[in-house]
Image (cartoon, rainbow, N blue to C red):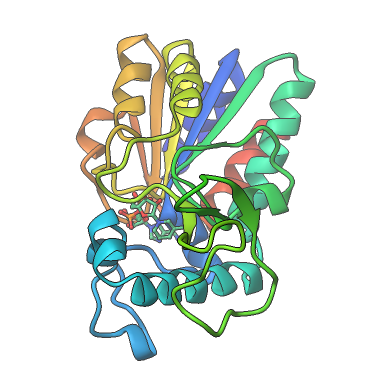
Length: 251
Ligand SMILES: NC(=O)c1ccc[n+]([C@@H]2O[C@H](COP(=O)([O-])OP(=O)(O)OC[C@H]3O[C@@H](n4cnc5c(N)ncnc54)[C@H](O)[C@@H]3O)[C@@H](O)[C@H]2O)c1
């Protein structure tokens, strides 16, 4: 592990352009469940992967909105962890050295921004801004849990509010995806953290970067679909290994 950490730190220090791809795992240590965890309490019988679809919302908008509101409040109550904080510091460090840094996330929780990361590319939208199904207009929800579901749109009597996340089967925001692909194609190093690397096109960024000659590094407590194709695999929790990586880059 020591040698792998040193190698990862020197790759990140040497690269002029660094891209970081994060998934649900970086927020696991903040208490936010990944989609592979079983659900808790009232939601025990449901599978997140069947609720996070346009079909599920069309069939039962009250159920899906209630679940997303429950998750939204969970994200508001969660705090960024040392992994989020280390990435915000990594951005400052690399920019301070004249390099470029792009953080691409599949997370919808906004914990990266709350930790101080800027310019975050949110591939799957975010859970705090909802939009009217009729007008497409977006709006934030209040910080308290809602009580009536589905949520009627204040903008159109026939509309509902839906979470501003990208559901399975929906297309990603085109400009955000393009920006992420351009960054990956120009990267000298790509660090993938806390993603099972099975959801595309996000997982394809790892291959784009590798094809362009970037050194690829993975941080995850288990091996993933990407492990066999990356250059350095750090089997560890993000909240432990990221501060250590940063320490080795700045000492
Ligand atoms: N926090 C969030 O915003 C959130 C939470 C759940 C799901 N999602 C959505 O779920 C979809 C699924 O893809 P995904 O790959 O992001 O998540 P995933 O649930 O498929 O995979 C999570 C990965 O995180 C790893 N992990 C668990 N604890 C970790 C830790 N402490 N440090 C590092 N890694 C850890 C797991 O081993 C797993 O490989 C995404 O589209 C995302 O939008 C987002």
